[in-house]
Image 1 (tube, rainbow, N blue to C red):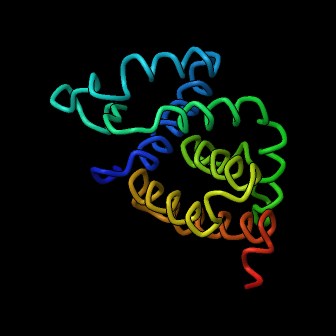
Image 2 (cartoon, rainbow, N blue to C red):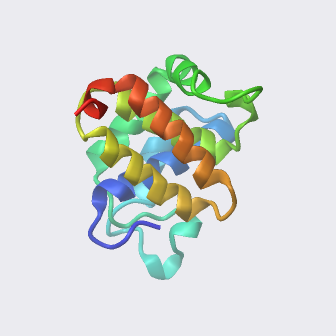
Length: 160
């Protein structure tokens, strides 16, 4: 998934995995966050024991990872409103693939939580991740939603 030397991307990948796990298992976000920090992130996440496909992210910025997971857990309903407001036609947040849902929630959190990183960086980061998780139409779908959310939440950045 994330190329070597990109700990912030690694944080986002791990956050999406943790959010997916929390939703699928019903475990609290804090429990999953702790599991990831102890067993899947950092130098102890030895890649010889499995790779990204096994949920390991050896290079990740733990503070960013924790901020994303906690933020999405804390603001879930508001973020679903943001994501849902940018879906076309009869699409609903509940209808989304669970990994795509986690990705869009995390991106919505970042876009709605300030001005850094710039919106275009957020879009590019999550598009790289979408391409790592999906090989079908999902990245194109994600790009449309990410762009619409960014233009809505950070309109000033697109008026330059």
